Image (tube, rainbow, N blue to C red):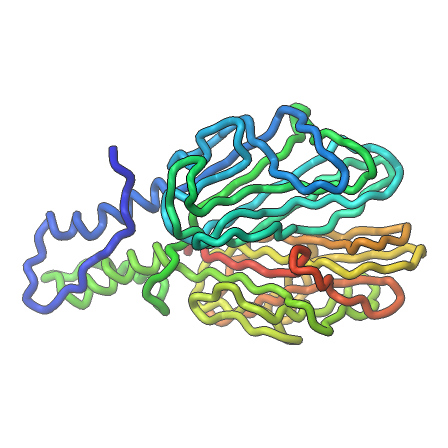
Length: 373
């Protein structure tokens, strides 16, 4: 059975013949694509060996879902583009590490986008010691537009891991703890915008071209190109002041990678204005520069809606100094009304202002994806 194609619904005009075959032609590709969009979920249960200081792909020896056969090899860490679009990629890499010595751990994504290779962009910089198992997370919104076969020259995504323990480690491989990744198509690369949330109003009698354009053409257009956004911080002078939890400060993201509905505000008042009502996936991470204090330090990542109470994700207590940087993340699904404003927020208590990490691979960022009404 052939894979669905990107829908191209017609624009109806007054006097057009409204026939069942024409309606099916408009909707069938949309239903096929949205019901079976590209999705890969993989896990590594093999206890992969890792080398300190060496960033490497995580091989996924088990596939839970691969709707478009973009992975299709249990020896590869790479997912290959089979259909153009923006992909929401999420993953976690737990390590078998219970040593008390503090070390840095991170998960990231690298690959090829638009035919151009890109280096590793990491999630949180996780510092762990005191006998605890580290499990760094990563989330990114990545465009893939060049399709190709497994192992070919098309666009691709690789989930990576990095540990700096000073020696070899294995990734966790227990019944309940092992690395996993999900890579999901969430939007076409281009489309029509802005569009309202599909009205799905009652069918009039007789059917009018205006109703067809609003409820068929624009509904399909919206669902294949919904609001998506990714903003991040490029090295500058932004910092987070010393604050006692649960006080927080907006993370001054200053660069936009994609914002197809024009919702993001950059700078000191950074945040996303929901262009339409709906259920949104929201992710924010903050990665700090190094700090040298050995006193008890806390740092946290959160989201704030309309200036209200901050919802916190990671809140980390650090008892020793570090020279690599440190980070925290938050992932939430938020039901937003049109016009609601979501801010990426961070907190730290090193005793003075602490700059955001200036390394491109360790960027602070925010991702927003409309997922439903």
